[in-house]
Image 1 (cartoon, helix red, strand yellow):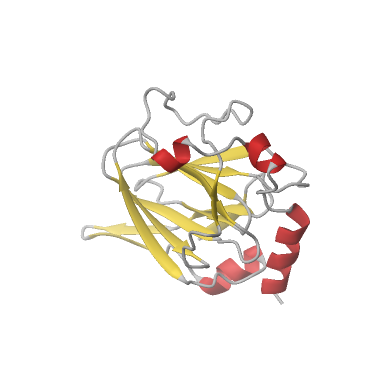
Image 2: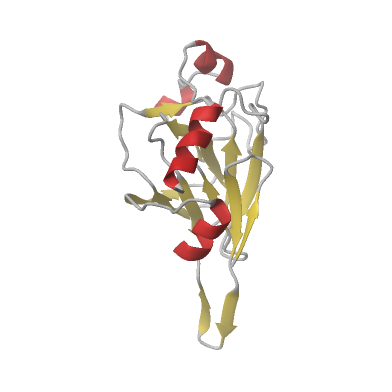
Length: 200
């Protein structure tokens, strides 16, 4: 597998090597030793989630308080999603920027985002099935959201606000500026230090 850093520090895209024959195909979508060598810290698996979404569903932008935050390793088994990583860490050189990666069963890529980064995706097809490996279990009191259609972020989800489906919680989420003013966003240096400590 090939693990390549994205433009946002702390995020990577993983492209597996696919082995196919008349029976189908086989691929390795996660290997701990390779992952740790490239990213600098192991992925502690605490929870595995799966979501199935209708076309036009937008989930996110979600993040968790750091420490401990919640790192995520994400892939799409059926359908297709536009997976979006947002740098919401105050003090980061790329604060307020985002990067998108299409995840689907053709390339079978995955993305990894470390603690403190925001995450969301838009389902491009019906029955898009996304699997997440998470470093920490879901904890409602630490879970946060940023409004996915924040005009200052201007994320290109592929669907206008009128075309998409949002949860009530995501629709009521603060903008990035509002979350920053309320002191809800993670600190960049604290996130970097936390991840370095995980790597020993």
